[in-house]
Image (tube, rainbow, N blue to C red):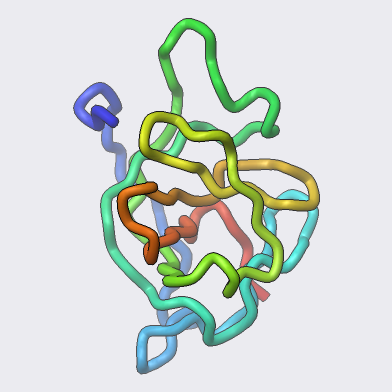
Length: 133
């Protein structure tokens, strides 16, 4: 993905001290912002900073655009999961190049995260695209 095409405005991240434990794991459950479905249980993901571009949030059937342009955000704060079976409830889009986007399996809203097919052990969930409880 070409991140140079997108403006990189800094967005306010949730207060990390209430979300990240001393060992870097998620303290709270990670939930879908739309339907509240549980994506991750506490202690199952590690906080990671990595600059990733995610298209704007929409439903699964509206994720791809026919004209090739994509609106979205470059986000840096993520929950990193090393095994897809760690998730409580996650879905994946069809391949977009070498990327699969993570979506809520219940309401199919997303993308809430990112997975590169070249790396079988890295699944990123953007803190700004989920709720915590």
